[in-house]
Amino acid sequence: MKSRLVISLMVIALAAALIGGATMAWFSDSHVSTPNTFAAGTLDLKVDGQDQAVGVSLTNMAPGDTSSYYKWVLKNDGTLPGKLSVNFSPINNNSNIMNEPKAIALEEYYGAGNVPDPNPGHLGWFLKPGKQPGDGVVILEEGNGWCIIDNPDGLELPHSMGWGPKGWTVPSRIHSQWQAGPPHPWGIPGLNGLGGKTYGTFGYLTNDILAPGQEVAFFLRVSLDSDLQRWDGTKWIDVPDNMIQGDSVDFTLTFKLDQVQ
Image (cartoon, rainbow, N blue to C red; front, side, top):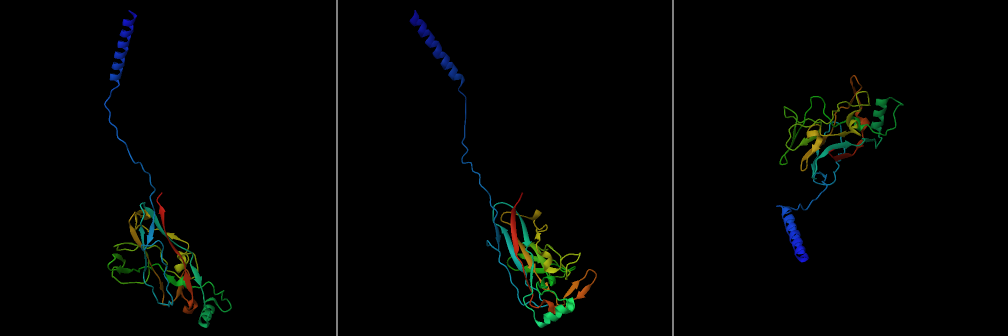
């Protein structure tokens, strides 16, 4: 009797286990996501296809001379967009020599007995990187697509500095310097006025942003007037041309690409 009861209980337990197992059997499908990777992007500014910018040098300038156009092509060779800018270091003015014509000119300009230390020089007052009112520029580099035109008559005029995307037709006026002479309430004159300042692309790129693979050029051209004058705040005053004999200026341009915040 007991053996039959034990067998019966075992049968009931087995049946319950089978029934319970059946209620846990569901359809299913699964997939594995692999691999999962996180990688940092890059910002890599190339200047003329290189990892460093090459400086320019112009010697033996005389009143009336205008330099060639100097151009630095800037390309974002990374994978992230970056904010582009150019910084001018402080402009160093150097006197370098003191000959008789220069000494006489300085005495004439400052007054007898009031000639200051010949250093620094004065050339940075009169080199004009910007554009005088009404001036325009024309530059076209055949075969490379770089074109800057801002003159309805197509005349080439001496002052230009700014940005130009490839194929663009109007230059960015990064700065306007049209006075010459000592500092006064209207600002620091000539090339000196750019020292220590940072400039964006002034709308030639949206919010100054250089996209991956995108490139833009920075142009610089300087001129030295044939008749040196300075602006005293009310009128133009003649300056003895010989006072800049042997003078020079030097400065550094820093092109920078910053992460977009």
